[in-house]
Image 1 (cartoon, rainbow, N blue to C red):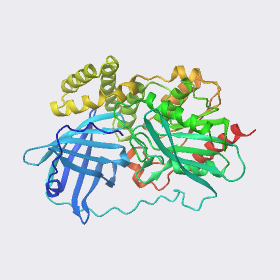
Image 2: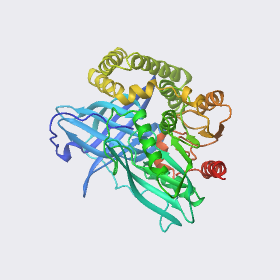
Image 3: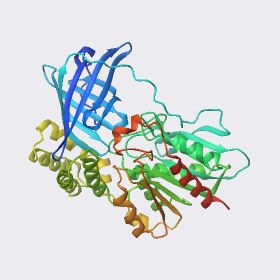
Image 4: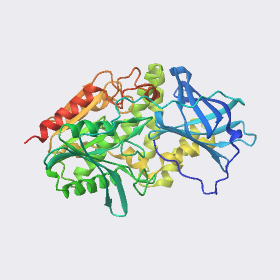
Length: 452
């Protein structure tokens, strides 16, 4: 998930009633169609909105940030890592725009089919693994800097005498807070708690533009995030409670690439942990992802192959213009129109796929950094991960770094939860934040490699 580019015009808020109702549309992935329903009602403190995905059996998925400004409707679906931005028709009956999910984007037209909708206020999600005080360790609010960027986070220190080994946690794609919060799941808080209780200090921090951290732009790249990770390493190396020779980097999804780039740039990591981290290029990840999502959504092999081929064409349009944003935007927009997307939707897709972040992510291949890594490495994958498919990445990583410890955990999704389909729309319905076997695998390994 990532922020869309804001409009230049000053915002003019529409009446809340203009957005109330039942809105229906469908995402086209190859020949597959995924119907979506957005239900909007007025609540005591503003608009309430929920999303349903009938074909996938998902209902009451929370929608946040529903607004209209200058004729542009926007909302986010944190559970899916998704965001919509579209133009409202003059009569208010349709929203025509783009659904962005992770680094991908698809056209979406939502049409009002009813002027009223039933939406109950969402109950607080049940997340029993979220740590609650009192803690048997110290949790300290900290800040550090990377040039003009201020990064704010939490440093947890084990009880007892140091200096302690330490881990820096690096988030996946999209602006994330220090807990990597996704629909109430606070995975990094759970990782920090588990590791600190085992004697390992943990630094987790808000991404640029989130929480207490400054900066933040759609043109910030994984290399920029790696520079932030390097600054986090420098900060920890200056703390007397931390053993500078036993600091590692642990990244989830894109955070795995962040860790690899940081080590390539001189960050003195004693070890690296990748949780669902790519071992192939971003273009290959996105192409494989398109196939995996179609199949997990009930599509046929033919539909998956078509989606994969279409995504590959978009990847080529971006890669051929990786150093030229305007040229990439033009190439993507032309391709989107060629395959039948309306002009307004094609423009939205092109704007996202030509961003600095997207062009860098698509082009970056971690192979060289993996081969050059000469410290212990653990990589865990999940066999129901539809974002970073295990069958695409685990075996390739083994070829690049034969001494890495690589584990594929059965039955888990991209967030390392027990799952049925592995699709993002399940995240909201799963109470488990992290599977116990994932926690044990990672914490046991880090304790082992950091023990004198």
